[in-house]
Image (cartoon, one colour):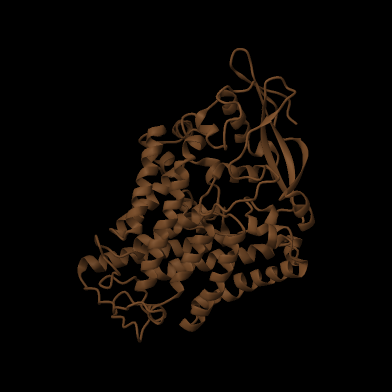
Length: 502
C-alpha cells in the first residue's frame, strides 16, 4: 500500500490514486441513490402524517432522556426541526452533497456532508433503518472522510495520496462484510447451508425478487448447491487475498466482482451489493489501472509540518478506535463488558459494525396485503409499487433504489404482527386518507375517499415453473393464508377502532 509519507512511482510501487478516484465517484453515486429513494418515501415513512413521525419519536426521546443522552441516542440534525419541510430540505442537501462528491468537488467535505445527512435520516427512520446496508454505507462514508483528498478540485489528488491506515480500514470493511457473513452462516446452525440447499429457493424468497432470478430459480439443484459452495469459498477463503501480494488481490477482485454482478442481476438488495462491489476496487493499484490504459501519476511526498503531524496522529487514533470496535462488535456485540464500551458508545452512529448476511435462509415467501372496504364484503387491495402482488406482473429490477416500505413488509411477514406494530399504523393512516402514506403505494384505489375498514391478509407466494408460465403467463402463484393484523375500522366519530387480534 502507498505510504502516507512516501513518493509513489506507479510503475514500481503500489499507488492507489485511480482506485481512490473511482471509489469516491462511485460512493457519491451510491449516496445519491440513497437520498434519491428517500425523496419519494421519507414523508410517508416519518413525515408529519407518516407511519412513524420523526417529530413524535424525537419528542419521546426528549421526554425520557437528558439533553446529551437523547442526542447521542439519535444523532440527527432533525433535533433542530423535524417537520415535512425539514425532511425535504435535508434530503435535498444530501442529494446536492452527493452530486458534489460525484463531481469531485471538495471530496473530503462533500463525503463528510453526505455521511452526516444520511446519518441524520437513519437516526430517525426507526423501523425503516434496521438494514445492514445502512451501516455499511455510514461506515464507508465516515472512513472516506480520512481517505478522500483535501482541496476544492483535487483531481487525482497526487499531492495528497491516501494514507495507509484509511485504505486498510476500507479494505477491512470489505473483508468483514464477506468473512463475517461466511462465519455466521456456519455458526447459525441453519441446516440449509450445511446440506447445500440454501440457494434452492433463494431467488423467490428474498425481499424483492428480480425477473432474471425467476429463470435462475428453474436451474437444477446441482447448480444451486454449487453456488452454496462458491459462496463459502468466496466468503471464507478467497477474500483473504486482500492481505496477499497484488497479483492475488487483482485475481480476487475479478472473482468477487463477477459474483457481485451475478447477485445484482438476479435480486434487488438496494445499494448493498453496489457498495460491496465498489469497495473491491480498492484492491487494485495504479499499476493495474496503467495496464488498462489509464494515465498514471506519481504521488508527491506530503510536507512534514506540525499541523500535518497532528492530523496524522488524530487520524491514527480515530481509526485505531474504529478498528478495535469492529472486532469487539463481532466478538462481543451487546456485551456489558468494559471491553465492549466503544461498541456501545458508537452503536447509534453505525460507523463500526458487525456484519452477517443471510445467516438464516428464509424458508418461504410471505406477503402482507392491505385491503380496504366500505361494507365488509367487497375488499379492494392497495397495489404495491415494488412487491409481488399481481401474479402476471414481471418482477422488476429496482436496485440501487431502496423502497423501504415494501422491504420492511417482507421482514414483518416473517413474524407475528406484534413484532411489527407499525403495520397497524399503516392501516390507521389509510383510514385517515394520509396522502404521504398513500404515496408509498402505486395508487389510491379509493380515489381520495378513504374506506371505512382496512384489513391485512397474509399470502404465500411461489415462482411458477416453466410449463405454467408458458401456459398462463404467470410469474407467481399464491395462496391466501390468514389475516395478519386486527381489522381497523373508522368509527362514526372518526376514531380508529381495532378488532380482535388474529
